[in-house]
Length: 230
Image 1: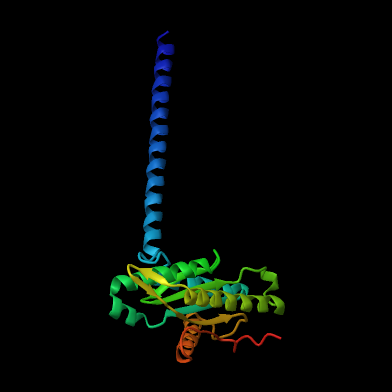
Image 2 (image 1 turned 135 degrees about the vertical axis):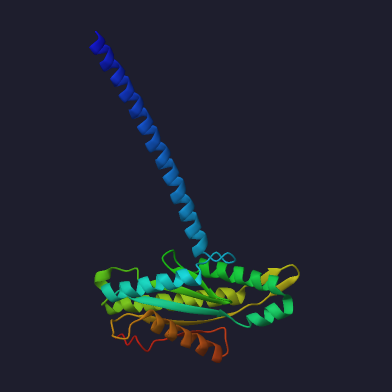
């Protein structure tokens, strides 16, 4: 009888230990989930520009390196658009920084509305923005001239929509109703070469941005030199 009593007590003790262990696991999982959520929220905040909601320069550079590496491995085309608000300093000087901030926010909205969910949108710095356009077609068709032409046309259309929609818009702030324009330069990789790097792609897109500025602003200039597609 005493032996059965001892076994019963042992089972109860094991049952209590099991309950404690399960509660510990549940509490730990809940704590871990909260920690992961807090970490994810912190990462999202750190990767987004507080004023515009676009990605930060740092996140953009990491994403660009990833996309260029993807191109290097899979030969999937990649495009980069650099955008700069025309005469932004004049708006700040004449109307103040609050108007400048409003312009940045409204331009960001137009960029978002005229790009796709797969594009990576960033505030590159100051009044300059950047868009990474990864190739979203089938990987086995990256060498198909028609698909390359479609990709180039998409680059041109996205840049054109952003430029045109901003040109016809008026940015309103208090009593101000401002006409704002933007200059855009674009470059892309579609074929592997030995000089491939993020910095080279940035340099090419930036060079064509400044070409758009030199041609009178409110223009789109695309580097077609690397795309002799029949």
